[in-house]
Length: 243
Image (cartoon, rainbow, N blue to C red; front, side, top):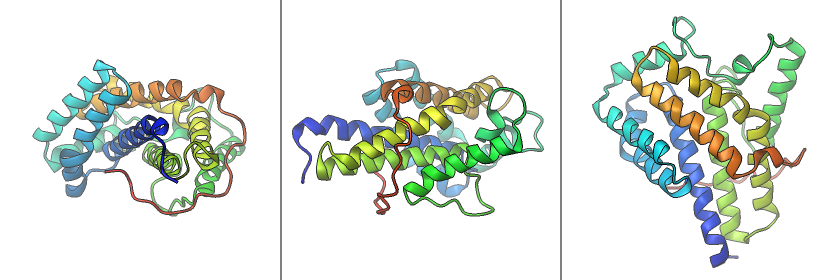
């Protein structure tokens, strides 16, 4: 079934959310030649245009434009140093880029940490996502942003193929619950720390974008109103990201 005209705006909104999450995930990955090229040629221009469509927030759009200009002037050595200074454990200005390291309150008990990480992994497993052992942590900002990208892509595909049905609702509810229970409760704080750190402007701007968009998206899709236990084992099909 093809999406009706009534669904077209929702499809476009989901695809634009996916573009923003994809670009944010790329920004916080350790940079290499390929990622810099992708950022300049596709992700950052699409980020700016997607933000114009979904938020009408001139501040966020302005940050995306500033980030694009910074990337035009950056080389790989500068970005690698900036990434090291922002995130490496040996850096004196490090901002921890993982959920378990950013949560408010006293140091977490190991049992609580295990439960929280298991909950993150449960979301991933339900949508066929596996985190490679020894790779980027399941609760790393890149991993969680990429998962939000995946959910938005799957929602758009479901809407295009089936209209407003069960599969689209599963993806939407999972996005809302994952934001409420995980990404939205710590990523804005990470963004604020980056914005206030004495480091390269590239991550200060990226931090403001991260904080601003996560807060916007949580409100826009009503993350606080997400139902409990919405993730169902299904939707394991592999689909391309939006272009």
